[in-house]
Length: 121
Image 1 (cartoon, one colour):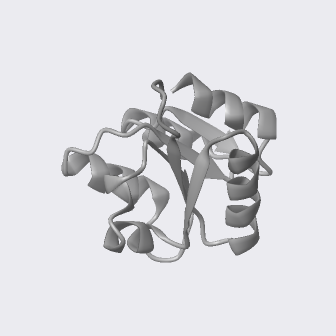
Image 2 (image 1 turned 90 degrees about the vertical axis):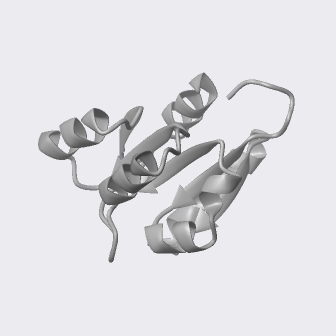
Image 3 (image 1 turned 180 degrees about the vertical axis):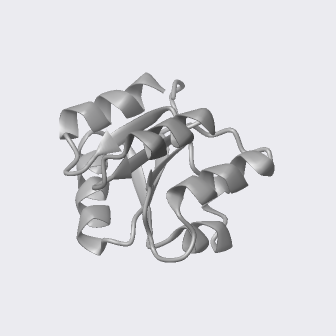
């Protein structure tokens, strides 16, 4: 995520407290965090139009993070996607990385690793 414009990270998670905490963390380091309560919310509000990077939970009610990733790629959206989960699962990690996720992060999130992953993009 290079350039001089302030970058926008879409934060997609059904846990409101986590969304707000990540949003606060990102804003503390100069990155705009846009919060969405579900993949459907992100798609209906067309968050893909403004997001430079997408941070999505793997397991959510409705569309999963993996289904969201596949939908985005199917429609030609190329933003980097980071997948996070409380359920460490090597099969899910392999599927996410195969489908184009750039990182698979375990919850609770390590703040330094999250910021580092985003900045590397």
